[in-house]
Image (cartoon, rainbow over all chains, first blue to last red; front, top):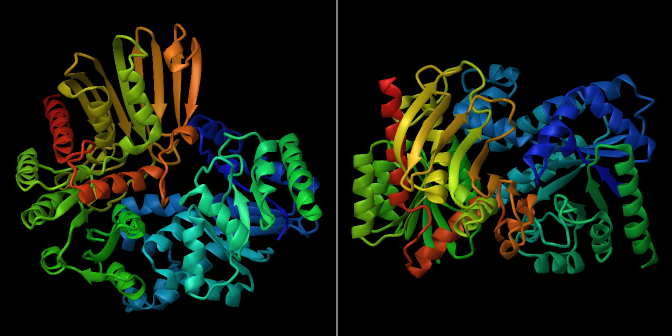
Amino acid sequence: MDKVLFGDNQFFGVNHASDEKSRAQALRFKDDAAIIRVLDQAIDLGINTFMCTTHDRIANICDHMRAHPERYEHFKIHPCMPYAHKYANAVTELGILGTIKQYVPGNFLGTFTKGGLAFLNKDFSKLMQILVDAEMKMFKGIDTPVIFIQNVLVDMILGLKMYGVFKEYDDYIRQKYKAEPGYITMNMPALLDALESVGIENPIICASINKIGFRMSGGIELYEQYLNERKFRPIAMQVLAAGALRPKEAIEYLGRFPKIESVLFGASSRNHIQETKELIEKNYFSVKAIK
Amino acid sequence: MLRAAIVGLGKMGISHAAIVGANPSVDLVAVCDTSSLVLNGFKKYAPVEVYSDFRKMMDEEQLDFIVIATPTKLHFPMVKYALEKGIHVFCEKPFCLSTDEGAELVELAERNSLINQVGYHNHFIGTFRELKRLLEEDVLGDLLHFTGEAYGPVVTKEKVGTWRSKPNEGGGCLYDYASHVLNLIQEVLGRPVKVTGSLMKSIYSKGVEDAVYSLMELDNNLSGTLLVNWSDETYRKMSTSLTIQGKKGKIICDATELKIFLKEDNPREGLEKGWTIKYITDLALPVDFYLRGEEYSAQIDYFVNNVLSRKKGLVNTFEQGLYTDKVMEMIMDKAKLN
């Protein structure tokens, strides 16, 4: 994995500290061209991995990438599925069955017309695979070396103790997409225990890691213990704790955990991208190299 | 270990199931729903018993508490059955469709000394708690006006949906969205005692309102406006806020930040003249398990701790939920007169 991963929250008005900033961002990135411009700046600064939700608009970005293969030759995407609000709003409006009907591709229900739903009812593995395939469709022809499940879903499966679902997802991603499965979570220690319990070893886990313990459920001490002692491949996100920390102190904190493989961050301007990337590379990964 | 169960595995029910399941003091032993698809999923992957009949589940499972997250019209018979069996109850909001039925449940819970809570989760969001504290500290002086608002993209096209589009089952923006704001107003500012005007507008839905606008007076004589619309696509998700104008300044509070404007310094609170912004990152309640927001875990933790210690809760009691139902009734009555 690349050391620096570029995130997409800023493009879709996701801001954990302020609804107002979030609105300003949504306005700024109203056009896909504005997103592509910032992505291109990131690429020119040497960033080669974009970690993004399976938002409808990402499909347009993928179209653009396929149309300009030379420009994006070395560019990779880490898809994170699903875009939860799409499903959450649909469940409120249509119920769970209605949502499945809406998002399971038409040809599938067509194929199984008579027994379609009865079939789904028994074969959950198949249902999971169909939904994964539907989300992955937009990335056809694009290099996706790691494929993540979003934290809402990961943490829901975790709380429900449906650990078998993780195993099925893990197997399917490796088999079908020849990719590494990844897990985003707000409950890293509990998740690692759960994954290990179903035989998933050394998993890629993307979790909040920051000095003030923001969104580090289970407590910062337990996180630090796992980062020091357990075997997994951590990606640090929310390192600035939604803006509560200054970049320098935030990155210095990460330097205490050599196991961290990558840092995920999002930014909207060229200067900000450059600053953060350099800060991560100089202050964190160079420290790591010396160690 | 407390033995717990969930009835109703929709969006909130599944989310509650995960949060209850992750609580180290609780064993989630059973779930109940009418969808065979959902039940089969639980049967296959989760370590719980599944039921399609809530009475059978409560009869067989020796429960300490139950979470009820079914459509509102089902709350009454389910909560009643649980309370009669001596089971503590966490019930989703809004509480009941009929205030007579709600009153019966409040009385029954009281009589049987059972812990009871309604799922108005905003009270477990750090910013709204801080707002309440600041008002109690009198940072705004005499209060002049409030505005309670909520906007979001639930119904954005014309379509026949689920029970949420049926008025007699608790559908509509008033019960679903506005109830949150009314409950916040009630517990943070004061109980609404008079509704002086209300508009309920359908935008895309047929049969229910998609927007509610109302003028009201509180028991402390403060008056203000309620502005709620669930057909507003300019919001990515539900966004709830309270704005309070006082003689010494103004506070605008939502789930992410608290914007405070003061005419003069307030040294006791460390607030300077002019604008100060407090962020949720500094105010969030720490939780051991996170799903969708600290508030969802924090409210269940609060309930579980009350059950464990047999301590009567002070936040989101059935009685408070019932009062919000009464205010919704006042708003509907006023709208009918128009």
